[in-house]
Length: 428
Image (cartoon, rainbow, N blue to C red; front, side, top):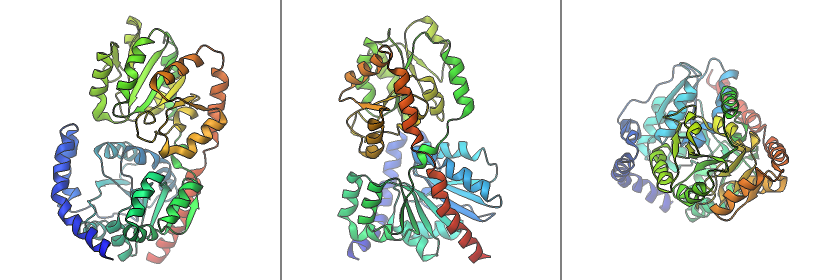
């Protein structure tokens, strides 16, 4: 109780610090200065025009993963709308691309910071019938405000790494109440379920991850296959690279540019310029997709391609023959390796895989991935697959591995459907 009271008090004190944080982030990403009114409750939040589902996805990855649940929900409930909230500009941009597919049925705003009056105002004005929170975005005041208003909330695609669980256990009396407040917790794996249960979550069901149900855009895949026919060499994709990783790889890419086309896709758009500078300083000629959409500059000689566009990961994966997985060579816990594997690209992962430990373990067991300890080893491994006659078999195993991770969206939708229908009946 004391910790909960202290936390609520700290959320008041932290609001001025949040403004400083936003200004600091805006130096690299100016969009952080937009829509401040929503973050601090200086606005009227959008009122419902139809029975409303609230879905919160903190940033790009979570928003992209929610696409399959959004598709299923809106197709099953043509009378309903979705309020889609996030916490980052890139998450909001990703949500906007989803909203274009459903004109008038998806409303967006930022979720306010986790302060009691702000959360109370948010729920009083938005009035959702139920909520879905994606993955790990669990906030005590948010959950308390929803419970006080009888709004059932589902923690979907739930995951909890051992590292994150350790932090939550430190504040168990505070976070335990929040985790126990969910109507249902739909875990990605048995390991996630066990950690979530230890944190106080109840009514837990293992459903797999909806991230692995994101089907590649057929138009992007077709475009990639057509473009690849003109490429002089096979493509090695460095997918979703994080801070510091381009610097690890750049010297090795420069050393082997005659052997393959390297395609680097940074995880965050605010780092596109930084990544281009790092590659150039290492002696690589860089072709940016934003400037040369068809990569025609490859006709002029070896170059590193920079995927500096949003929403085209399906295109980049379809263009590749082999993938080196970003986030796994710095201490970031790895990014989602299912998407390249589902495109037939075998994957090289680094030593940091705590966010996808079970997935990586399964990929290694299936032969759809191998582990390399250093950037040089990863590049040399990827290049060896292009010439040693094993690529076709590795591609087959990657596809086979990816096929194991399908159906999670429908399994999770079963619980969402039950709670939504129960709420609609109660409200009618």
